[in-house]
Length: 265
Length: 99
Image (tube, rainbow over all chains, first blue to last red; front, side, top):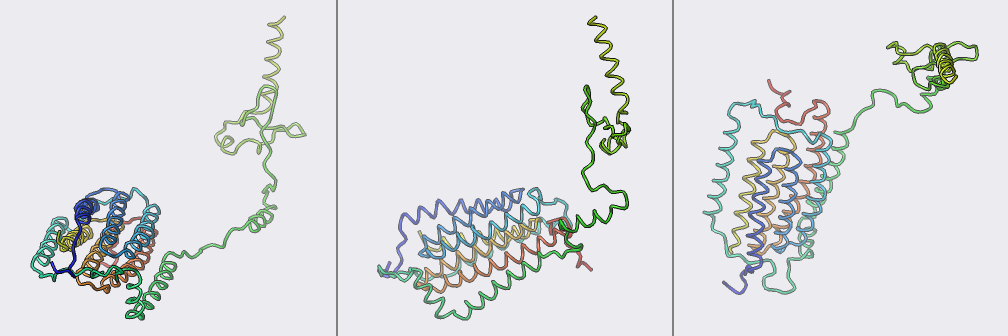
């Protein structure tokens, strides 16, 4: 190896061989795991590992951006949408296109074979490394910023426009138009006042009757005129016919007190 | 270790992502497959940047990240809208354009 060439340290080798198989396993999890939330977790693992590999590969800025943008923003967005759509939304197993699964597997294996062939056949130049033996190094964010804002200034601005457009697009797409006017406290009060001539009561309904031996939902209260107040019993009980007539209760109490008085005597 | 190992890893992840897009029916998981493919290309970009000693690869990976973020925002908004009208997140149910 030439002095300017890249020497991959033993530590990086160990890191790679620990992380790479785990990454492939987690990525396969995306393929085989049933629930979407677990797939999202697998993808988070892949992305964090990818950030570690970036930092190992002399791209600390990209590593940090990877964590912030992908695991921090994108995957959280995925999880939010998963919660919105329903965590239990799993794959349907009916095939709408016959044999689609096997064709998909075949195409996937074919793509893997093509990529493997390309990687195996391609003649890569001897790796140089970003710092080039210079301890100051050019592989820091400063060098990246110089290229980004020097050579790619226009692209940078276009990307800014793209991000704003995407944000506006998301707002427009998820915007829901109101079909009915908004119900405010004011409008509710007005509508109740307006319904007053139709026999609607503004105040809360009277509570059920409270007697010496009975204090339950099904006993109507007695009005000042001695008549029952039907509204004091829940509407459900009234419709089911489960309300107890109020005059029964004082009579029953009277009988009970008489019986107990006789027993005492 | 050879630096091409990173390229092999990127190729493997890309293939897995593409297979995910082809096989899964849940639109959100399909979207995750797309994200995995984008990440794999980013890893290849970073590796090639290191291989050639040129930061431009990293700059391109950065742009891919930004575009991917925008794409995720719009894509997930579309999925949410479809879910609202169809009550389903399966790609099989979206067949209104079928002739």
